[in-house]
Length: 254
Figure 1 (cartoon, one colour):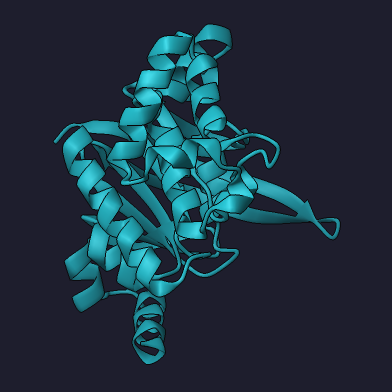
Figure 2: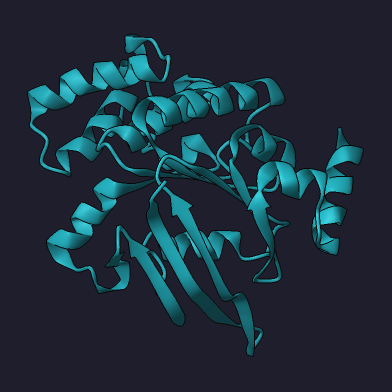
């Protein structure tokens, strides 16, 4: 495997109640091509702040992020636009990520049109994408509030894949769905990862889902990486006390 994303000593601080708060504290990790990497930890551990920095939505206070050996912090204009064909995101609440006034098909095609894909090609690609995520083509003519949460999340995945990204970031992408639908979405992601040679970064607090999908896992606590390694090893033989606590809590919740 070769490294597609490299994060070195990444940090971010915010002012909270007039006090400086460290959200991410000098973390380093890599994502390999075709790999699924999980980032787990309770709410407020720094997962979402990390994702915002990886997707160029938040400027780090320190550290480097390299996508295919290119420093993403130096990207501007056309090169930044090209960056978003490489990395795409699927959000927690699918309905909130769509414009409620637009049909689902138009929203999916809009992301293609924004990246200079012609109208006819976008229309053809739309049909292929819906098929890929196991949605009927008539979904394209519906509005986000006219489909189920699971269908809407499949449509969101189709939209993210529309520009053929190399990396898919799923930020708590299944937590708003019921358990059966969650597993269906995870199985879909597994299949797409294989078919498209996708690298997936799965942000979650659900260790069962991470165990099911991820090759490696990173455990975050209070802005720090406290443990990382092969998922099987981390789940079955955790070395850090916080990781042990997370696993025990997950087992009790089953």
